[in-house]
Image 1 (cartoon, rainbow, N blue to C red):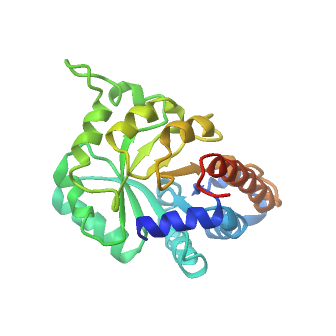
Image 2: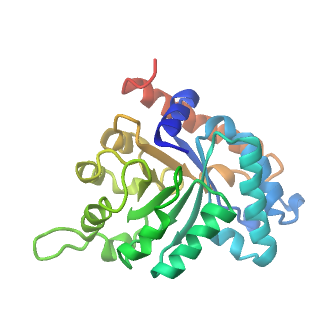
Image 3: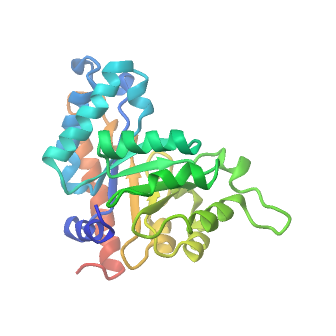
Length: 274
């Protein structure tokens, strides 16, 4: 999916919502018997009208072994076949030496055919560039995350006062461009989006941390929007596990619709739609 196609879908759906598909069997209805794909299928059908992206996190599938990985593959295939306009982001945080990264790239972009993959940049350029050679695919680089531990390394500064996350943004911007590289920036970072936009004005930002983690959608929009919207805001458990009863899909639909309505108003306020 190209940058223009993604922007067109944002305007069409009046939304920049990404639904994180992180199914926790302990929070799923007992009636599903732990069936990850059945759960995902219901969530996808319920929220697809409001979402421009789905983001399955590999950890929630790999923990179940072969059956879990099959559920992940089935989930990607289901989205592809039924909602081809929706961006599929594999949240796998891969990144290793060149030969290994090439295999990861083939796995996710060829075998599984996802649109985007989260990657960790801390092993350097040769761990990222193998993912870059796929037209229409996106590399989503971890820049400044939403968790408390982000302060341990990402915000530490060198002798010149430059935080590590800024070095990551500056260095990686030369490895890709606005058409194939996004950045993960946590919604809990608030006004830090202003500095991030000074370094990476044109890239899309994948923004976790709205909802259960308490990030402000208004602050994210104020400092993070660009001329193509430039934001993909993710909510996972705040949508998919808002209920653990048999009404889980209906409740998820309502939660997604509420976020969609907030995003629609933001898009109106900033002149993207009327």
